[in-house]
Length: 262
Length: 308
Image (cartoon, rainbow over all chains, first blue to last red; front, side, top):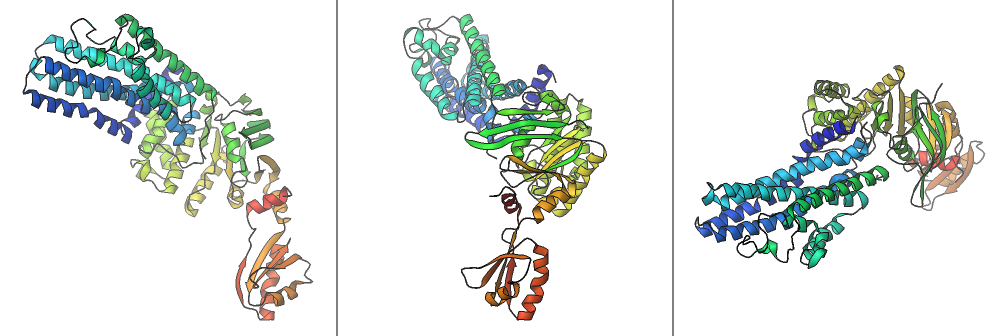
């Protein structure tokens, strides 16, 4: 089977399967936490719009950008190969007439689609609850799609990186946690070009407001110490991170043999 | 006849542990049984033959094509793995149909083939139930169904009969034999001699990663018969019973157990010994509590064959 068709079929198989797993349900529920927060904030704000709504939106983005997509990508990305080895189901895939690369790419695509859907639902619901008073404002929708795009790119980049970790290491969760919540959290506050060695730097560079522009009203949590890269370069960097780590994951998966506990 | 599966000086190590050691074998069409105790290297050989593992030394090929990173061979190979592992959140039909997606069949053909495979293994009535709710026997059968659904020329089956009840075993044995009638190649492993015997007369004995013997079942039986068996008899008077067998030519050695009630007799002619045991017990008027064969298992036979 050609690579493209094999990726498509692998995607279909794991997208169908992925929708039913307990992990998906758990993470989907986690994605609804901000919706509850938004409802609570809305009740507190009594329908007022303006700075308070903007601050709340920014808090939501901290949740999505620095926690939700990282944890989603960590558990989905590392599981692309690890769950097959741990559940001893890898032989079902390895004994089909498809290239090994298709298994990684197909599962990556399926999980990225599932994660993006979870992010879109969580962000969409919470964002529009919070900004319900401005539904007629076109800028609201533009900002929403920008946020969504940023998170989508984040899902791709993080998942590719964690997929590589999962294929290369036997126990990838701990190093993944250290990267996602240690390195990524610390390095972004370093001055100068050091912060460019994190994924989150490029994601923040794509947010609809920039330091000193008057945007990010309120506490500007996401802009603290940010020395942004230009949006075009940031998109390119995120796509390059995705491509490089996916290619590495495919290469490792092709060369390495995975021995289950049986 | 051309070899369908061939291995040449094949070795595999798990770190410092030897999985397979210098195995050379040619497997032709028909059914070949890999027989050996647990941990003998049967699964390792099958994983190497299906390209799931890479040989450390030597080669393994299917129809002359090396199997590592050669997915195209799986158009004509069906593999049934040994572990009881599944995508549990799928129904039986989804599981088989899902794995058929990787062969390039049309959606209709996938549905038809999956339904047919499940029908063959007798799971039509349960095909819409989740695999996680299946009994052990049903799980074994659905695993077999996914191996045959694409109609492969070569079937590699790792302990396919384990977990099946006797009726299920009989059905599956009949089915596997049907593949031989169609001129296909089946490589099947088991650690139970009667299972292999029911399937084929062509047996390969594997032990500690090596091929110990190759041949038909009568030859293997001969080897096994030559193995000295121990028969343990717990009775009210083991010494009186031992006196009855002192001059018995079938007896190699006799020892008494530490409990003072057990006599352990070593013999090469177990059937002859059993024939004489009952009259001896009756004539001596001894009360027998238990008769057992502590080494009547494949592991002991293999130990004997390798001189351990």
